[in-house]
Length: 313
Image (cartoon, one colour):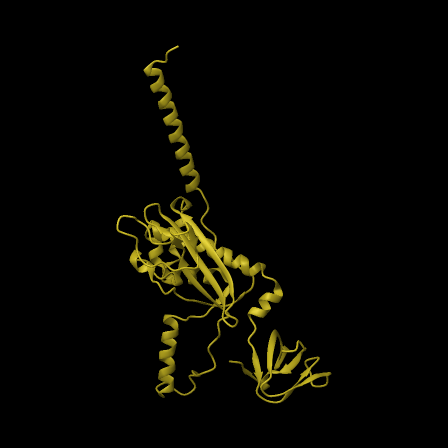
């Protein structure tokens, strides 16, 4: 039984029409997708400084520093208190120099001992492709563009397919422990949110100095990849055990004067032990006025008067 060419053509036309309809439907569903959501927190996890990676890969793409992008996410999420270790710090240091030279009026209250310490440092980078193993070394930094025409960076960005693989590394400042290392991924087809949601989402970047991420497909893809990684970082920190989080935000102190460790936050309570100058203590975070709850290096816990402390270096 033979099939006429007209019949075959008719069936192909039906198949092509059905495929076009499916593609159109998929496009419509993408356009109706909700805009991405930056995670939010009911309380602060800690104080955070965002620093740039050493390799400035973003300049080749005419993008702003990814540190500016991450600061937008952090600010809107309210999960961390941001401290500026970039241009803001440089401006603050200029003010301090003016104060030190006597140029500012009396009572300006600018001097040492007022700068807030960062509990964590967050470093944004892109994933580095390990071509020898065929895998991805997400801890590495890229070196340069691949040969012209490849359309990709040496590690996580493809200009041709509009995909991005990035990495965020969170480090505890005091212990230098790497608390989280998360990879984020995004591709152009992930940018289908409609109803003006995309414009509203990327429009918020301008105030944070990251407006260039809204202007190109690759910029938007990179922004979404970093959001994917940031969501994972926040989830990591939220799910951390309470004791572990307390350890990470401790600032060790040293006894500057002789004192005592008390069972309660008053001078009439039981004395746990004497505290000699030079002894190291570790605050738990509980405070009652000048009284701080601390532990010593032997595991003894109690309350001590904080006016006898100095920061350990």
